[in-house]
Amino acid sequence: EAGVAQSPRYKIIEKRQSVAFWCNPISGHATLYWYQQILGQGPKLLIQFQNNGVVDDSQLPKDRFSAERLKGVDSTLKIQPAKLEDSAVYLCASSLGPPGSGNTIYFGEGSWLTVV
Amino acid sequence: KNQVEQSPQSLIILEGKNCTLQCNYTVSPFSNLRWYKQDTGRGPVSLTIMTFSENTKSNGRYTATLDADTKQSSLHITASQLSDSASYICVVSVAGGTSYGKLTFGQGTILTVHP
Image (tube, rainbow over all chains, first blue to last red; front, side):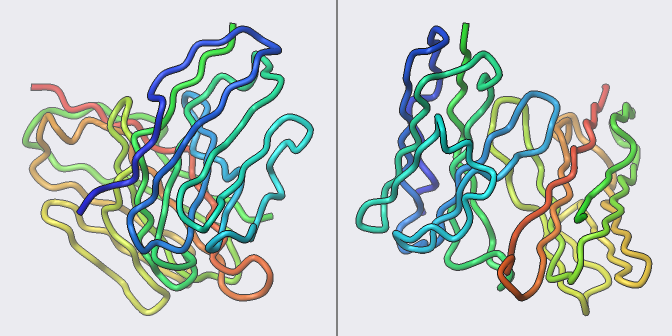
């Protein structure tokens, strides 16, 4: 079974530039998550999709971050303009259904962003 | 406020030894508790998922316990191997309401196994 695919794996940009990350979840997984993980900390949820609808984006800095999941499959996360504090690993994850049902959540390898 | 606290922050052990990692949570209402292993530079990988009614669950050399009354969980690693060196993250999910399934992550315990 193919896992959660993310790209690019690494990205270095200057502050105020824009960047986009792509995620392809495991086939058939309705729930898709984007997490931000700063070095030494646990992941923080940015946005959660159920199919192509947003379930939770309460911690997404909407003035600079945006995400979409067109057709309920692939997803993109965009940052524009980037700030130094956005340097982190951006993890995409997916599960068959919501985590409250005990569904296993599978994570991608992450996209490492460095803002200089 | 829902919180998950893990201890110790870091731990160094010798290969072949056992160790136990702790997780205390204040998440309510409780749905399930998960332990993840995250190797450096990789995404987290699920080790166990436990619901309210489960006291213990094993996955190879990893055994997780849950005491829902005291809101504590532990992850016991038996006969450690060098490949066990990683960050271990405790994650708790809420039940019901508008936050159904919302996950609260701990900061992780960094385990280093030396030969």
